[in-house]
Amino acid sequence: MPKKHGNSLLELTDRTKRRNAAETRFKAYGIAAIAIGLLMLVILITTIVGKGVGAFQQTFVTLNVELLENKLDKNGNRNLDDIKKVTTFGYAPIIRGAIEAKVKELGIETPLKSKDMAQLLSKDAAAQLREYVLAHPDEIGKTVEFRFLAQSRVDGYLKGRVSRDSIGNDKNISAAQLDLVDALVKVGVIKKTFNSAFIFGSDASDARPEAAGMGVSMVGSLFMMLVVLALALPIGVAASIYLEEFAPQNWLTDIIEVNIANLAAVPSIVFGILGLAVFINYMHLPTSAPLVGGLVLTLMTLPTIIISTRASLKAVPPSIRDAALGVGASKMQAVFHHVLPLAAPGILTGTIIGLAQALGETAPLLLIGMVGFIASNAPDSVASGLLDPNSAMPAQIYEWAKRADPAFYERAWGGIIILLVFLITMNTLAVILRRRFERRW
Image 1 (cartoon, rainbow, N blue to C red):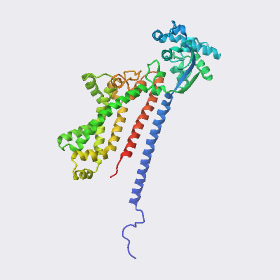
Image 2 (image 1 turned 30 degrees about the horizontal axis):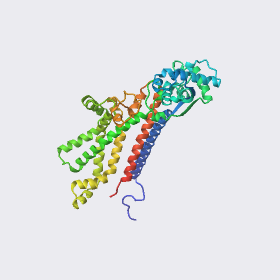
Image 3 (image 1 turned 180 degrees about the vertical axis):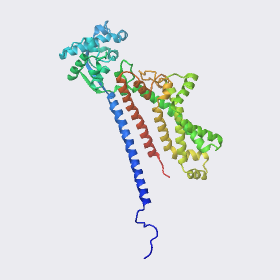
């Protein structure tokens, strides 16, 4: 009988068993890592949505307000200049009378005086009423239905953020006022509904957190991104084309490439300091302006665009260049007519990702003062949008997060939701554009 030499291919050796076991463990580690990553993502999204979704709902108080002629237009001539002389303090008694009349009409018994009842409304109510009267002076003398914002403590009470136990030392709300709130909720005078003003409105002072919105800061971010796009894209693409296609390979270009790579890793706050020193202190550009913010973010975004553009140009096969040169095209014609169109999807992707990164930056904006300004009005022109003081979405979120009132903290989480929607949209657009314009060779 012949003697066997070696092991059979049909039998697993101990070494093969150990290798298979190691491979199985590695797959388990990979699956566990993915599961942990997904779990962290779910926790993050759940926390953000859970804490921020309340900002998209707001408590309103519906009242029938009699626009008293003897208070608002004593002369009775509907002269707008005379009506403007009545300040918000002149509208406060009208609001107090309206809520007192509503409580009496509903037969609700309360020990509160009209002044205490009116404290359930936002301090923005008088300004809202005054703006309406100035826009509709013919309505003076009539009774008009208004939806006023409730003050932040009332809103927090309906959202569970404020409880009767937590108001012991709170000077802004009392137990008797919460009793009145409960009674008015039952009859539908006080309701919690969707608040579009949070998305499209402007920021408010510390005394009116319920009136604060993201709209104007979104406009500020838009103008900053326009500046970044107008500067970073042409400069970044032109620099990339020169370095990749035309620049000679020597020690000077090596130094430039190393510095571009290093700039991509520089902390963003360093660019903020650079912007403060150059654009504000030296060039004397306006503080807190989207133009300065856009210039700072352009400096920060350029390395990202240059690196991604060069990678896209490198990905184009050399045969494309050789074929173009072989049929008589010049170097520039080969690059702009053949190489650049094939690299366009990668360039667009890198640009959009760079813009998304810039959109979420806060540190550079801290240095140029875009968190120290309360943006209360939207710009009325392109020039004012670029040069007037404004805020940006990440700076607005930072500003809300450091304010004392819990209502601002809720709005900070809501602002994060809006910012994430913008970032996800931009990154999705990058993927769609890449797949739409990608060419095979």
